[in-house]
Image (cartoon, rainbow, N blue to C red; front, side, top):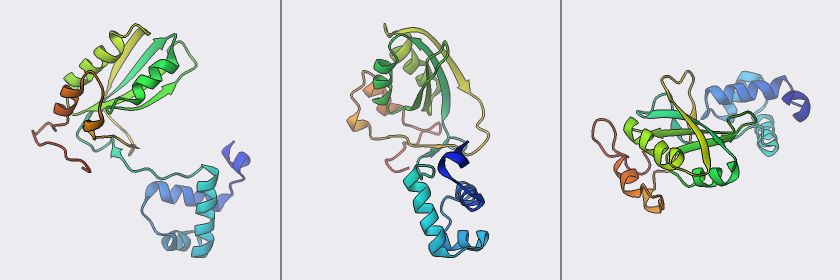
Length: 180
């Protein structure tokens, strides 16, 4: 259990819970809630960060961003090679190695659902490294879920580069700018 491995106590768990609910909360406000001094909270947060238990990440909130998301399940004999390709695509938010029959899972996002399908066709269905592909469109995100997304398409070296840069238009026709 994580508490045993990292020796987390009730205060550590409460700090993590508070930060998850309010990532921009100050150490002073956390200190008031857990009835400890601000320096104590700062030291505990530093220790949790050093352990790798607590991390801060800015990115796209999948729950509220105006995007379509899909989970792509893949069967391949070459997961490491496929993960390398996935890492280079701006619309592939994250990938996971799995232990079952389906051994790679990819989370993809784009403002246009047709582009998601084209991306899956180009990167996976037409890929000789891939045996089988199953794409599921995500219809709802229950909790806030923040993942980074790279919108710097000048660096894209993908065969879909032209379409990638065009696909960053939102559904209402306004172009997304870097930093949005």
